[in-house]
Image (cartoon, rainbow, N blue to C red):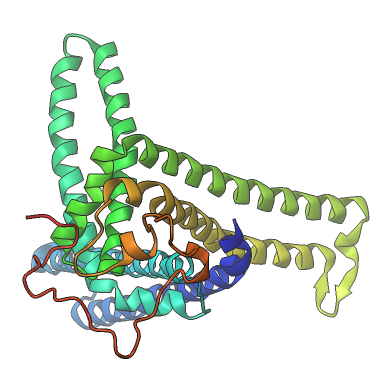
Length: 335
């Protein structure tokens, strides 16, 4: 995991900064909304507030507006965080580069495309899940054990589908293609490399657990040191007693743990997509770009120079680009 050594810390810091923006946005948004609602209530109602809410019907309107605002805020957070996470990891995996601002930059840059892909796939999952729920309920009336077994199998089949959605986003950012073609390409990995998708999910979960367990062990060790040496009553730093000081360290560790978990998990998924999945699912690559075949997955020729001497060949000044005017405008040679 050389990529993790080279870019892991910088990517984690980038993710932490990006998440801090989300936290501030949530706080400010909730505060402004609370002030707005408070001002409205103060100007409209007096006496029996509950009765007035029912009589005027404003209470129902406020609830609907509140739910709509929360939904939009949720869409913004998920799309921004997903775009920043996958985009920044793509930079490290495909271009061997990372910056502390990459998460924020990709979060806003990929926002709309991420929203379209996520809303489309979530809608698809809800439709399939609804159909499966009706089917399982019908079976449960006669054979409850069989219904439970079918439901568990459905959950197992859903895991590689979630990874396929992740692949759709990776492809969208790298190939700059439409949401529909990105989803179609992502779910080709579900059909053609089902087992590898499932393995990617397992490895990503193990990486989450590894970082989580390591962080908890460090926090427990700090608590043990605090209790063993009686540091609770000692003023280690001016204004901070022992327990408060170690508590502050624990909070900082948790803040670092969360982005590190997601960055590491996404690195696992993206690296496996690049090395294990894309060469199988997209062996012919893209007619419009060279990302998936000529640059990352070259076919070895007997007289060819070693790939590692020039992994990303640059076009020469006098070299003419191939004529692609008659080639289909789609990413993976689909007719």
